Every structure is written in structure tokens, then in C-alpha cells.
Amino acid sequence: MLFRNATLADGRRRDVRVSGETIAAVGEGLEAREGERVVDATGKRLLPGMIDAHVHFREPGDSHKETWETGSRSAAAGGVTTVVDQPNTSPPTVDGAAFDEKTDLAEASLVDFGLNGGVTADWDPDSLFDRDVFALGEVFLADSTGNMGIEEPLFVDALAEADARDVTVTVHAEDASLFNVSAKERDDADAWSAYRTARAEAAAVRRACEVAVERETRIHIAHTSTPEGIDAATESGMTCEVTPHHMYLSRSDLRGLGTHGRMNPPLRREKRRQRVYDRVVEGQVDMIATDHAPHTAAEKDADIWDAPSGVPGVETALPLLLADARTGALTYERVRDLTAANPADVFDLPAKGRVAEGMDADLVLVDPGKTYPIRADRLHTKCDWTPFEGREGVFPTVTLVRGTVVYERDPDDRPGGESESFGDPVGENVRAGDETGDDAGDDGFTHSDRESESIADLAAEVVEESPEDDRS
Ligand SMILES: NC(=O)N[C@@H](CC(=O)O)C(=O)O
Ligand SMILES: [Zn+2]
Ligand SMILES: [Zn+2]
Image 1: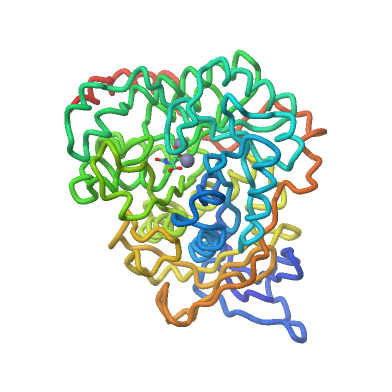
Image 2: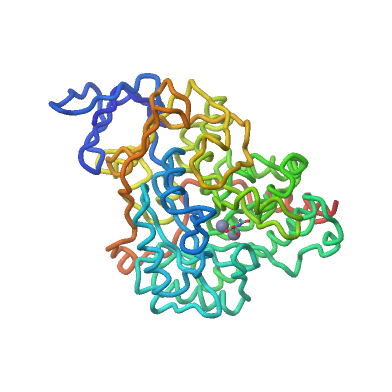
């Protein structure tokens, strides 16, 4: 397959040849070979597929919310070519047997995947690490869906177990002792945001990073929703991710979203959302990860204290970011770094995350001239609603996973239209047979691409955004 005259993230116009599973050449004036499919990519952007380091595909246990088939179709249609599945399924992925069960189910995936191992009082590190575990986590420092919250001593043990095997630990950082219990008297949708305070996140991130620094290891902070949380992570040399919902939605949106807008960590005030967004733009955030956490609309239509936490997002993340690249709010290079190059670096996927010769041909072609409104009934997740209904997105027209077309539509047809087609389940476990974990030996991780704002400036901002801000 030959993409002719594509615009890459950095603005270069190139021909890109895919041969087998890899990118065989990136050049100018490449001649089409006999039998080769040629795609005219003039005016289109060709980007590395998104690596979404945080999804919940719900199998085993909750296939009415999502399956590997529906979740990975949703990923493919949204330009995501690798997903990392979290362990709060039923049964939880805390031992070798549960890991094997999930591995079998993931064979239905159209996109590449990593499977994380979880930590509970019953976890079995030996059998778990005997498998191709992508990372440990998300380790829940407070309860979320699946009630896998743990106390600090177990967290410290888990860090040691993972460090001994050079496996990264991803942390859901909230401190339940800092939740605002007085919010429990309220029953409006915003009460959840008032309850799970920004301070509870910031303090938990700070503490988790402190523990990691003390133990001379590193952790990755999941779904940071506050500027304080991002700063606490980056100042201690750790990495973090931000979700599209924390970039684009705030407590003001809860009036429209109602209990559907309940998630952990919750939506924050508009001022905080803006500061989170600014940090994404400026490069202090390592990656966008969706925390795709599907629950059906019927389940979400409940009292705010009973509704399950979580929103879908795997299919809409790249389209929303590309809509911002189109207006210039974000650069294409930043989008590439946040969705592909950085997650590949942080999670050690050297063959992924860039459009360059020799890399895996995980590619997404988009027409930046065309936006479409996001509509739940045009998306492919089993989740029958989206928190981004009506927002504009730039959707892929072709998605390739290691050279295989897993999603395609006619460039003149809309996303979710009749011309769409999906490929076979070619997804593979990206850690399968990977030996780099054992001989890498380089745990002095620093992130090269982060532009450092002075620590004094950041500290001043944290003081300025005092926790009193949480109280409604
Ligand atoms: N984010 C959420 O609100 N929910 C997630 C769990 C999690 O990521 O904490 C889920 O699995 O439903
Ligand atoms: Zn979480
Ligand atoms: Zn999650």
C-alpha cells in the first residue's frame, strides 16, 4: 500500500509505503509497484495510530457494557491502534488464571493491546508476572468501579514487586480521607464533583510520587484531572495522562449531562479545566488517555450516589484533538506526541508511535478539511451514549494496524455511514514474547519532551488555587 503525497504531523509532504506489517519507506516521488494499492493522500494528514494507555473493555464479566469486539471496533474507527486494558473486570485481573482468561477474550480485538495486572489483597504477583503483563495498574488508591481500592502498605508492596520486574505501575490517585462528606447531603449531579475533591487528587498524587521517589522507582499517574495533580506528578519526575473529558468538560456541563457525567476523578470547575487544557497545550502532560469506561445509559440513569462512574471516549479522543489541531488550538505535532510518540516512549513500545521507516504500520489517515458532529448512534461502542454529543470531530477515513486495514470508509461518506467496513481481529498482545523488560536495566527515566516551566511558578499556582475552591 502506498500513501501518496500525505502531510505528516510535522507538515512534511511524503509518500509512505507500507509493506507487510511495517512502514517500508517514507520518501518523495516513490513509484507505485505492481499490485500495490495507491491511496491519494493529497491534502490529508497521515498520523501514527493513537496508543490509548487506559481503556476498560469490560470482558470478562460485563459484556453488556462492552466487549473486545465492540471496544476495538470503536477504537479502530476513532484512530486508536493500540489499547491498554485495565484490570477491574470480573474476575479482576489479579492472578495468572484471570490474566489468561482475558488474553483469550482479547483475541477478538481488531487493534493491538496491552493487558494490565491489578492489585488487591488477593492478588498473586508470581502467577501474574509469569504472563505478558503490560503494566501494573491502574492501582486504585481509592475505590472506583470494581471496588479495588487498596491501602498504602499494599501499594508499597506492589511497587516493589513491579520494580523487581521492571514493570511500570499506573496509579489511580485519590485520597478518600479527603473527600468532602458534607456533599453527601446533596442529590444533584454536581454533588459528585463536590464530594471527590481536587485536593483529594492532588494529595494522593503527591503521596504516591513521594513513595515512588523514596523507592527510586517510577510510576505513571492515570487520569489527572487537576493542574495541581499534573504539577505534583511532573515535579517529581513522574509521568501523567489527561482524559478528553477533563480537557473538554467541566462542572458547568453537568447541568446537561446529569448523572451521566459522573466519573472518577470527577469533572472540575471551569477554571481548573482551562488550566489542565493549558498544560496539555504546553507539553507538561505526557499523554492523552481516554479512560474509556462504558456503562449503559440505563445504568447511568440513577441517583447520583448510585449511578456507576465512568464515560466512554476511545472513539472520540483523536477526532476531538484533531478538531483542535484544525483550529490551531493544538499543533499536529503536539497531538502526535500526546497520542502516539509519548505513550510509546513511556511504556516502551519502540516500534510504535511514529511515522518512520521500519516502524509498525499503525496509521491513521484523516481529512482535516472535514468535521462531523459526534453522535452516539454513529459510534461503535456498546455504550449507547457519549458525553461529547454534538461536538465536532475530525474522524479517520482509514486506520491500519501493523499494515492491515482495520477500518475504512469512503472519504465522502460520514463516520458511521454505509460505506464503513472493518477488518479482521488482527490485534496482538504488544508484550507477547517481549524480553526487553528484563534486560533494559535503565530505570533512570526522565521524559525528554517535557518543556519545564519553573518549579517556583508552578508552586505559586498551586497555592493560588487553594482547596477551598472545591467547596460549592
Ligand atoms: N473512571 C471511572 O469513573 N470509572 C472506571 C474506573 C476508573 O478508571 O477509575 C470504570 O472502570 O468504570
Ligand atoms: Zn481510575
Ligand atoms: Zn480507568
